[in-house]
Figure 1: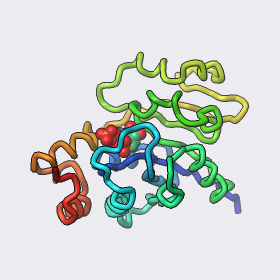
Figure 2: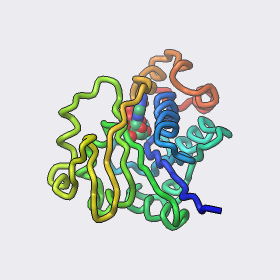
Figure 3: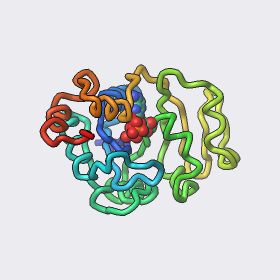
Length: 218
Ligand code: ATP
């Protein structure tokens, strides 16, 4: 029997809280990239953004677990929360490579996260550890895609389809226009603060958890 290489998508984020936009994007990426599994990895301390409301990593992890439930082909990893401290993607990818030595990894990230990539910790080591699928959310501008890599762009060849190829590692950075849902965690927190309903934006189990715990109430 052929030993098929596992195709794993990694979706990192703060998930404060996780919302239907995340789920829909992961679903679409999984289908279109033929990923066997997508692993959601909630961060402990996100190095790149202020964590509003100080929502604990345990709450964010629990909401992510509730959102995924027993959906086939999706998993939640607590590796960043367990590791504690700043959640550097370099360390996370190292750990995942150790756990799944034969897998091929694709890191999923939205265009807003990609825009900051040049500032990521040890970014030159991180990029060759996986393929990178940049999810283009509604309203993106083509010019936004040229700048994020800065001087790192020199390490890549531009392919005919616009994707970037890193010859040494055999990894790619490419863009995926997704249907997505134009929603962010910021919008959800704002609604919750003013006691507006969020039922259309988060899975019901997550909504129940937020109500039960009183998270995001000002
Ligand atoms: P915030 O509003 O607090 O900045 P967020 O909604 O962007 O949060 P994160 O947890 O920071 O959520 O996002 C995790 C990943 O999901 C990032 O790569 C982000 O770009 C992407 N993402 C967030 N919302 C969407 C969406 N609606 N569609 C597609 N990707 C998304």
